[in-house]
Image (cartoon, rainbow, N blue to C red; front, side, top):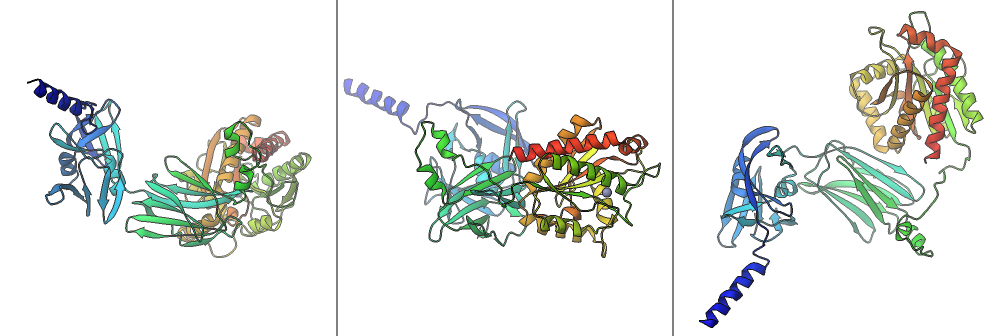
Length: 500
Ligand SMILES: [Zn+2]
């Protein structure tokens, strides 16, 4: 009898403390399941005190239109949905799909006689997104797959940043491979709108990048390195930035180590300009000129005259602040759009600013400042109108169709290094201008502008008020107002190079 008690208490001990019988108690409640925004039914939600959420696998897959089965011979469970079959074992964090093994954080478990899984399995295997709103008792499952929408890179002194923009961030894995040294990123369940193919980078860090389908569902991007390099990455809702450092970084770490470890991990390498010139070179581009007057105001003011006058004032001011300035035209001269970026590249500019005045003849109340940087996309319908006007006015040659234009700009963006800096500078222009002039700020926008194509430097196009607004037209003609605009832009330029 005594022995029996002992055995029983031992069993109880095992039951309580063995890991296969977790002490965490799950509470269950019914919540609504939405598939791509459409209500599909109620489902039990099991939540543990430590914040894990699990769903009965049968109900979940039935509601999503899939099925669940049992493989008697191996005692495994399979989940089938949208042409994919995943095999899981109770208690194991591993799963098998298409002969590959993956892992999830919480294994397939039994609670209240129900087989339950975390929604994570749908994210890992199918690329879906799960978002649970406990307050609203609602689980949203989105089946649209992440799309790689844009890619570009920027070179700094001791590193290169590769920037990937997605419709939503996919699940990914980054790692290194040796002989020859490479870094790879596997993007799971990711579609791509752009064709990366093979892109030569030709830097002292990365030779080239190339991409391909690693498995049917995995997009693999490989960086061919010049030597063994370290990397770091940052991510947010739809951006992944991978920074690859030059091989010398290792040597920097071996220099005397200060007490604070954080200092070591980011060696304090001062940014030095890639070119040898000391003075920063600013390229100013007053729009239009000669036979192309640009927009015309009610009182006959011509855009080409205003932007030239503002441009020349800005040139003087920037020079007084220690910048070297080249201007695409210093008189009333016609210069084709395509010639302007070529001029800027020849002059080895560090920053390009195209000056324009907005016009909305059918809305004479429209007012304010808009700053644009290059993109294959229009940020809004108004941006499209502006780009259309600016792209046609002094373009020489056959007008481009919308498709040709986008293609032209897109090819540029793939190799462009300056998008991030351009958008940063655009933000500074808006902010600084509001310190000097009392015009509404219409925001930083994007559009495909021919005048910004092919530039090897950060660049913006700024629309300084509306010539179609009689009040603004009058204001724009005054010396005082033009000087204020020049001061605002100069202040932005100074801040931009200081923050580098
Ligand atoms: Zn213009």
